[in-house]
Length: 298
Image (cartoon, rainbow, N blue to C red; front, side):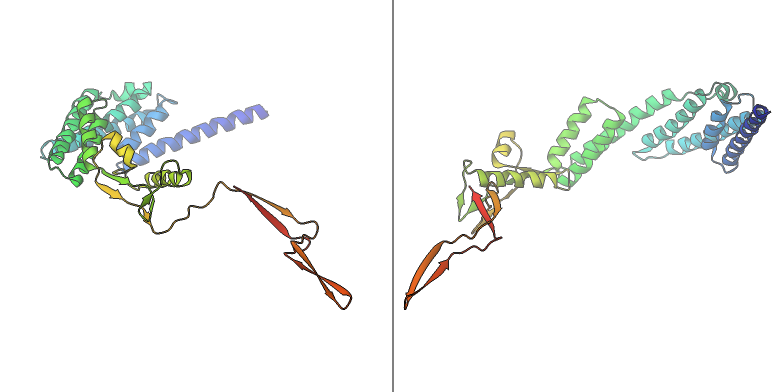
C-alpha cells in the first residue's frame, strides 16, 4: 500500500514539475523573451518529447527569435559603423547558440528544425577581426602614447577574433612598445656616493624597491628597470628616478637578537668606602633581579 502511495506521489510530483516548466516556458514566451523560452522548452522536451504544448512554444519562440536577430542584422548591414561586422557577428553567435541548444534535444531538433549559422559566424568573425585591425593601424599611425595605447586594445580585440594571427600579434607588440612608459630607477646614493654591488644591505634595498614598484605599478603601461637591465634589454628610457639622501640608515635586518632574564644580581663595579671604621659598598651598573638582558650578534 505504501509503495503504491509513493508511486502515486512521485507521479503527481513529476506532473507538477512538468506543468510548472511548461508554464515557465510559456511565461517567457508571453513576455517576448523568446531565447529563454526556446531554452526552457527544448530542455523539457528531452523529458517529454511528445508534449504538444512544449513543441508549439519551441517552434514559435524560435521563429520570433530568428526574426528579431535577422532584423537587427539587416539594420546593421545598412550602417557605416566600423564595428558593424562585429555586432553582426554577435547576432549570428546568438542564433548559433539557439541552434546548439535545440540540437542537443533530439525531440526539439526534430520539431523545430533550426538553421545552422556556422558559416555566417566564420564570415563575420573574419570581417570583425579585420575591422579591428584596421582601426588599430590608424591609431598607431598617430604616433603618440595615448593613441598607441588605444591601438593596443584594438589589436588585442582583433586577436581574440582571429586567434594566432601573426601580423596582429606583431602590431600589438609594437603598439605596446610605443604606449608603455619605461622608467629607470637609479641605485641609492648618499652625499653623491653610490653604494657598490658588494654592499649587500643597500644593494638589496635597490632590488626590493624595484620589485615593489613593478608589483604595484597600477597600469600595464608602466615598466620599471634597473639601469643595467634597461641597457641589456635595449628599451627606450622615458624617465629616470634618482634616489638621493643626505643621510640614510637601512638598518641591520640581519642582526640576531637574543633575550634572557637575569636570575641573579649583576654588578658592573663595586666601590668600598671606609668611614670611621665602617665600610660601605657602592654598586655601579647594577641589574636587579628579573631584568631582561638583550644581546645582539652581528
